[in-house]
Image (cartoon, rainbow, N blue to C red; front, side, top):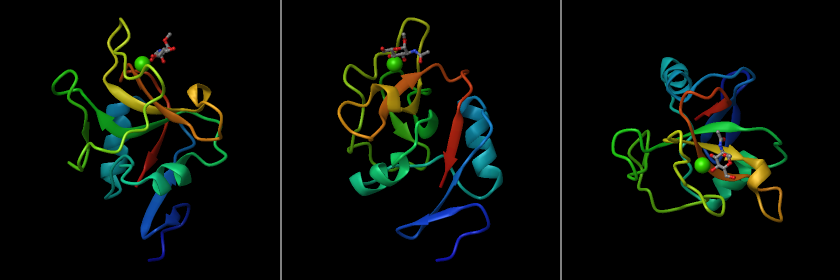
Length: 128
Ligand code: 2F8
Ligand code: CA
């Protein structure tokens, strides 16, 4: 494929790991402005690639903003491959509708797993 400067290639996709932090909606808009979306995780390989050696939080392209409890990927991909952290998503009391990679909740490996967090929180993000 060949990716643009600063984007990383993995299995025919290009990924941009942000260095700044934004809320979930603005992160997605930033990706859209570059012809992409927040990352959509379609395989265990892709999940492993995304989290490998990364000790940071990142937004991913998964939310239940539209209907509480109905998780959907920003590109409409099937929601059938799940890497939630134990006990997540829990829609913690303040309301949590946006998914992020949380390496602190990973159990027994380098693999960060998913947590739902308030969409207004600011984290780094990954465009694909
Ligand atoms: O331990 C689970 C819980 O941890 C935090 O809440 C105390 C997270 N909150 C934020 O990240 C704001 C919850 O999302 C998480 O479920
Ligand atoms: Ca949560």
